[in-house]
Length: 107
Image 1: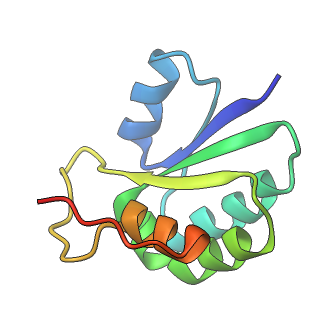
Image 2: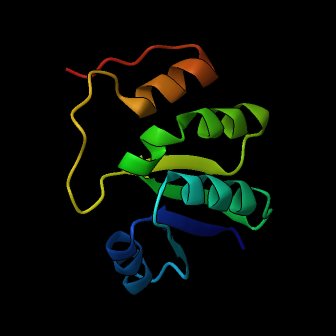
């Protein structure tokens, strides 16, 4: 059965663990997050990797590289305990645009 993994700061990782996601990893910085992402992205049992938004922003080059090579795992970012980062570009819409070739606009 496919599993979900989480890479986040300590508090956010604990929240996901309490919600039932056993593969929830606490990292201290973007370098540790990058190493953990590369490691768990090679696990064929992991279908989705949730990564804290602030960490994802710092290691976007690695996320893009992994996402371009294969369909799974799907890597998505979520706000951490500090809340969402204000953005002009929706990362999910951008992923759809790159993958499908269709731009989605939500008003």
